[in-house]
Amino acid sequence: MSLRPLFLLPTVFALAACASQPAAEDATAGTGTCNAEPAQSHVGKPASDANVQAAFKASGAKTMRSIKPGQAVTMDYREDRVNIHQDASGTIERISCG
Image (cartoon, rainbow, N blue to C red; front, side, top):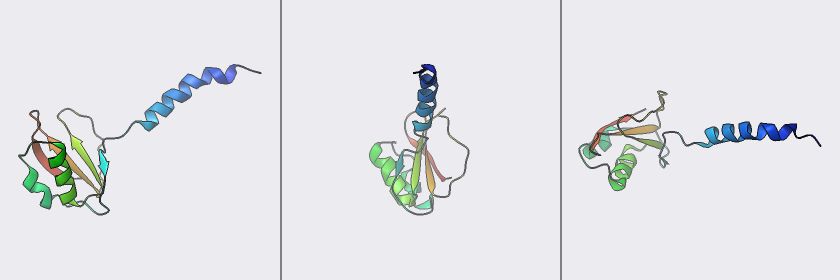
């Protein structure tokens, strides 16, 4: 039996770990297109789990990203995703779709 396949295991595990890392999406709930307007009442509130989830629900979006300052996010546009931007003090600063 050859040991050659065993040398590939670290590479396979490393690639699998990269593939399984969650993206910036924090949650999946709604089924429709994002509409950030109804969620704007949450701007200026603390970015607690309850407030972030309430803004997410109000937007009607299918997916959500809660984005902290300096956090890397993808630049792809998704009409079914709401972005909840936080400032350095943990306050919801802006809510947008994409």
